[in-house]
Amino acid sequence: MTARSADPYSTLGVSPASDPRTIERAFRRLCLRYHPDVSSEPGAGRRMREINAAYQILRDSARAGAVDISRSRGRVSTVNWPEYQRKWSARARTRPEPRAEARPIARVRCQTCVVDFGFLGEGEVAQRDLIFRSFDGGPIDACALARGDWLALDRTTLTDGVCTIRVTADPTGLSVFWRGKGRESAMIEGAVEIVDRHGSLSIPVSAILRRHGESAWWTPSMRRVR
Image: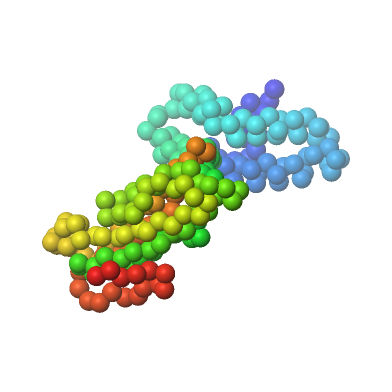
């Protein structure tokens, strides 16, 4: 085994500080030159095996880390640390995030996927009706929950094939905003959650609180109570 084949960085012709994209580009460039299907150079097959082996090491963060430790022996760590820190940081940024498991969905549907109450001034309350239907047209067997202390529902159980829930947005009790100091407006968020034996369905709800001035706009399906 040659010295070049023993060092995967030298085999691919890259620096130990190279990021994963640079390493992949170097690998592809060498493949175009030494792959037996396109190269007639003597020893191209052996060279291609070395290239493949080097790339497999450097694309694996654990094996590449072992190579880095081996290379750093006998060197002053304070000299090598910035170089390896840049490389490790680049590898960390390219790691795929784990996929979140899908949450079971309730067997009901709503005519809207989000509720936006728009602007609410001090002392104002607004309402919105949400209509829920079962997937199969049969009766619904579910409960309704308000996620947010500024939200209220006129019913907490759904038992018919088509059910209407009136959602009331009442931020008058949020005295921290109305009496506090800070921005003239703030967004508040909550949700209406429907839960049955199959899972849950969450309808996001939001509003923008504004200290002074008239409320900006209201959708036709929204009623201003006061």
